Length: 575
Image 1 (cartoon, rainbow, N blue to C red):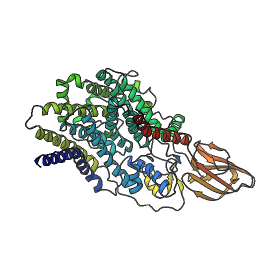
Image 2: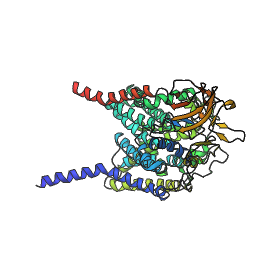
Image 3: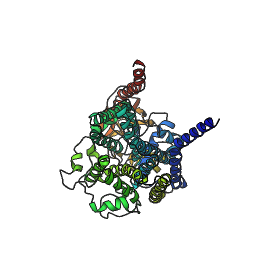
Image 4: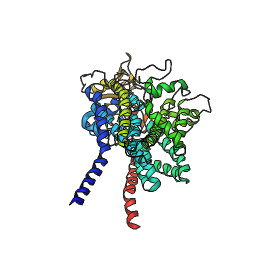
C-alpha cells in the first residue's frame, strides 16, 4: 500500500511539473493582458489603424459577403488582399478575428502570441539541455524584451509571428535526432507564411535558422544541419503554397525596394537599446534619426546580461555559437557603416532582403542569443547553490520577469489610447480621397480611401477623380457607356449598362491581372485602373477577382500536407 501511495504521489508530482510552465506563462500573459483589456474598446495608435483596416477587410469579405477575401477595395483605391504577405486568412489565429471582430481579435491575438512564444522559448531551452529552473529565463528575456512589445505597440502586427521563432529552432534541433521533424519545422514556417508574418518575420526567422544551423556544423561535425534547415524552409513553402505562390507572383511583378536603405545606427545607442528603463514608444533617445524608438528599443535585464557573460566566461566553447550570433546581430544593426561592404549592405543584395528598410530590427537575433546564454549562465550560477537551488532559481526568474514587466507594461498602456469612432455606415460602397490616419473609420462607413497610409507590397493610391477632384466610381469618355445600376461586393462587381454605340468603361478599382470578366472578355489597365470594352447595346458587365496561381498553390498545399501526414505513418509501418 505504501508503495502504491508513493507511486501515486510521484505521478502527481510529475504531472504538476509538466503543467507548471503552462500555468506560470499563462499567469504572465494574464498580467500583460491588464493594460490591453482595460481599454478593450479603444483603437490603437500609429500603424494599428492601417493593420486593423487590412484585417477587417478580410473579416468583412467572409462574414458579410460570404466571399474568400481575395481583393481589398478599401485601401489605396483597391489592392490585393489574400496575396498580400501580411494578411493571415488561413492561419489558426485568424479565428480570433472571426469570433471577436478585428478590433478585439487582434488584441487577443497579441496575448495569444505572447503565450505561444513563452511556451516555445521554454521548450527550446529544455531541448538545449537547460535545467527545469533555468529554462524559465530565456522565454521571458526574449518575449518580454521591449523589442517585441514596442513593435506590438506601434501596430506592427506581422511581428506577432516572431513568437514562432523559438518553435522553429526547437523543431530544427529535434530534426537532427529524428529527420521526420523537418516536417514539423516546415509546419512552423508554414504557420508564419499563412499568418501576417510572410514578410519580415519569415525572412528574419529563416535567416536566423540558417545561421544557427551553420554553427551546428561545428557542434555535430556534420553538414546535415544547414541541409535540414533548407529542407524545412522548402517544406514550409510547399505546405503554404496556397498563399506563397500568389504572393510570390505579385511581389515579383511589383518588387518593393525602400528608399534610404543606407542607414547607420550609432554604437552609442546600444546601451540605451539594451538597458534604458525608459522604453516608451515616444522616447527620444536618438534625436534626429529617421525612425522612432519603437525601431530601436530592445531592453534585456542587466541580470540577464550578467548571466550571459558568466556563461561566456566559464563555458566559452559551448556558448561560442551564441556569442557569434550576438556579434553578427550587432554588425547588422550598425547598418551601412562601411558601404557597400558592411554586412547590412551585403545582405541587401540577397533576394527578399532588399525590402528590409531598418537595420536596427536585427537586434532581435542578439536578444534571442542573449536569452539562451542567460539560461546557460543561470545553470552555472545555480550549481553553486545545491541546497537552495530551487529558491535561487525562483528568485532569478522573479527578478528578471519583474524588471521586464516593469518596462513592458507601460508600453502596452500607451498602445490603445485612441477613442473609438462610430461613423454611420453608408448603404453603397464609395471611394473617397480619405485620410491616411483614419482608414478604419472610412472602412466602418463603407468607404474606400484612395489616399492610404504607406504599406509595403501595396500599389500606390489610385482612383478616379471628377472635375471638382471628388472621387468617382466609374468613367466613360463622352458618357458612351452609362451605368444604370451597380452591385458591389469586394471580389465581384456587376454593372447594368446602357451603351448604344459601345465604348470603354473605366472602373475605380486598382488593376491586377487577377481581374476577369464573366463573359470571357479582356480586362485591361487604364492609368493602373480596371477598364473594359463594352460592345454596342451591351447590357451587363460582370467582373470578378481571382489571383493567379491560387489553384496551383491549393493543389500543392494539399499534396504537401497530405504527404507530411501520411508519409511518416507509411514509413513506420513499412519498416
